[in-house]
Amino acid sequence: MMAARGGYASTIQLLIKRGANPLVKNQLGMTALDFGKRYSEPDSVKLLTSIEQQYRAQHPQAAQ
Image 1 (cartoon, rainbow, N blue to C red):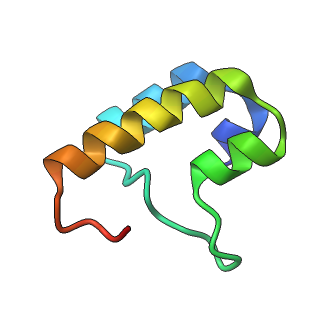
Image 2 (cartoon, one colour):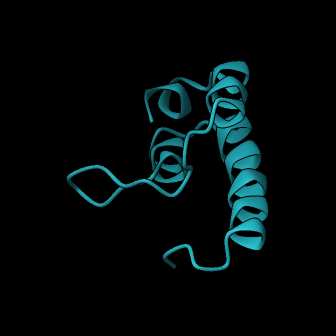
Image 3 (spheres, rainbow, N blue to C red):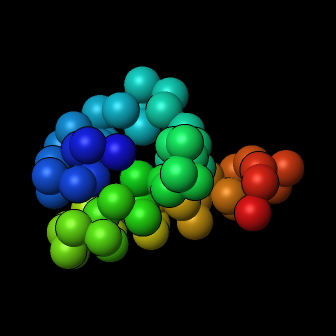
């Protein structure tokens, strides 16, 4: 989430490659994509939107 907030696309990619779930929410119910949107990080938003779509396609049981 902090990588998304800071716009660190390479860190986001590394975390996903290492098995991070892009749909995980923090105690406020926010995902990494939400952080990217809140802190106006267009690179994070674009990357995480794509990652979330791919993750949902590969994990149909994932929470909506």
